[in-house]
Length: 205
Length: 205
DNA sequence: CGCTAGCAAGACAGACCTGTTTGTCAATAT
DNA sequence: ATATTGACAAACAGGTCTGTCTTGCTAGCG
Image (tube, rainbow over all chains, first blue to last red):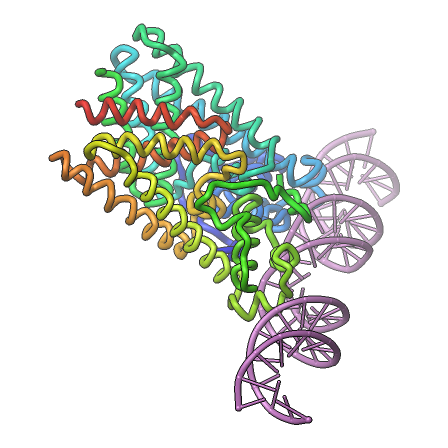
């Protein structure tokens, strides 16, 4: 349960959007990459800065020269990983052929590819909020701006369909979050298709 | 983010199903209640056993006499809180008038009441899994048996409707988990109704 | 060569963690 | 009245945490 983070954890390949496993040049990039991997795979609270420094090949003093505190490093990881994920998602979505309905449904096929990654660890923002359910207003704020990007896209698709943007966006947020969490808990990507089924029925209504 | 647990955190009232805030008699019950509150509100890793012992009014030695380790205490909390939640949910569901469809949709109204609790902290199992996304097979197993209870109920309702039980159950799991997480991240119970909308469309299909 | 700047390595402080142990006290049972 | 049980209080051991600071190496440059 609360096991210490192993010294040399899963290095395996990752989805092409993540900074994990990519060759990183500067010390700052290496630190950020190592922090992302360790935080996301083993949790924020249970990962120590010593482990991050060791895995990144940087000294702890270098880490603290680039990031004022562990909390700031966590924030940087969340922002970087969130931006990378959104860029990957929207790139994939722009390749979907068809109108807004096809794009909205295609979203779940993209998610399924994400879930199928052997190192899939869920949404870092959801994980961060789950670590401190009650307090942690800063993380909630970061997650809010992350989700706002997704909401904007969802609303624009709903508008193209001539449907209520807020209502559609909320339903899709539920379906997306639900698929993310169910796939994480069970390690089964099938829930992406279950979410797609529900989305299809909802849009056909 | 990783703030220490305050010495005297939110004591406020809770949903009637939870052990939190209820007068507890034996030392074991007091420890379990304090552990549930602190773990669920502030996270499992960031809550120390000293804090739990202090809040429960019990000595640490007493805590370790009843629970072999912190991990075992976490397991006991998950099992107790899960059982209490299921008992509450199924009691509420049994009061819903109408057939299986009304019960399946009424589930989201019950969830909305849960989300509206000012101390709502999400699903302890989801939170526990999110704390250590990759490892933590024991927690995943506990969450699996918890969710199995829900799946059994969902499947039986689907069978009564003459629909594919596994398919319906998976869709509803996505909707339930999604509503739980979205409500937790935004503190807005409205997502229960969004999930209900999607469920209605799916069942009408 | 000599100098400097940057970084790795590691010691360190102060706090917190889990889990154990010892001693004391009160209530109960025999 | 004595023995037993249960619980509290407190200290302790051994380890980890974050964050700071010092030391020494090395690479680049005049």
